Length: 189
Image (cartoon, rainbow, N blue to C red):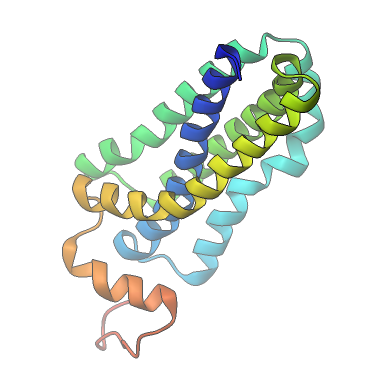
């Protein structure tokens, strides 16, 4: 595999980990910090994926008209900025459910654009048998990201102080459905 593919593979791998971290972080913040209801958490997850059916065709046309490599770099930088707004808002005491919805929607748009760009770019980087090998490596990276992303998200949440320590155990066990935890009367849960 040559240098251009390795750069694409690295970028896509980092992006995949980021996607998995955010898939864990957004609902976790919503539940543990903002006390969102199950309907709100479901809506938050839906907002993050609604860009696929709404923008998929447009994204394909757009990515055919721009330099894909540059677009992928700009898109990932935009996602970094979008997600970076979360700890800033938390530090300023301005984190809200509306903020999470905006982050999910904007990140969803970026994800659609990035996915279309990288899938369209790969055949221009690799050909023939190398394309199959490249796809295999990208899928393996995706599997690793799905495994490593959520725990990394938990570490980031705890380290950035967005979710307080006392929420950690009960929140995780409740979300896994394995706990008999019941909130005290007068508290949300």
